[in-house]
Length: 196
Image 1 (spheres, helix red, strand yellow):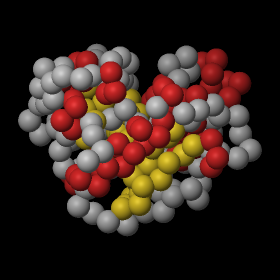
Image 2: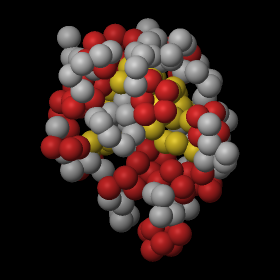
Image 3: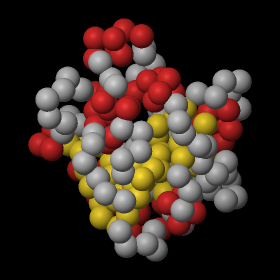
Image 4: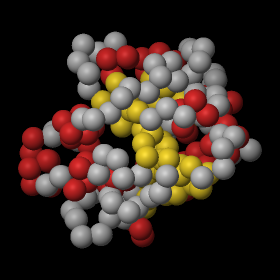
């Protein structure tokens, strides 16, 4: 059983439930493996620590939260192809694969086995992390390290690679920055970002 996880903190963009429902439906269409869909939100967020905003994503690595293989997807991910290859390969997005000079990690899509990478949660100190990691959770996850890159073509950026069309071999398009999926009414995005 695979856990597919997402974070809807403070009602994402004012459209939190729409984004959760759309992602859940998209995963169901594109993942052949049995899975449970779990949402970290205000009611079941991390206990006993000071996480808010994008830092809530660190709670994904709280010891004991999940079992087995975990696939994390940002709420604004657009699923465009089968997810099976993703869940069969543990890893994270390496921005070097997107043309960056540095090997900076992007946490929009992550795959790991429960119990791995727990230092992301246990080693984080808010007073220190928020001062030194001005780039947020992704900078902290990059500092902690220990990840392999996901298969290069499976996750692409809308802004960098996919504004006109989905690239061959792509399973997930990340919509970091703007526009967001609900703001796009033409082209390929509405064909994939849907509940039915």
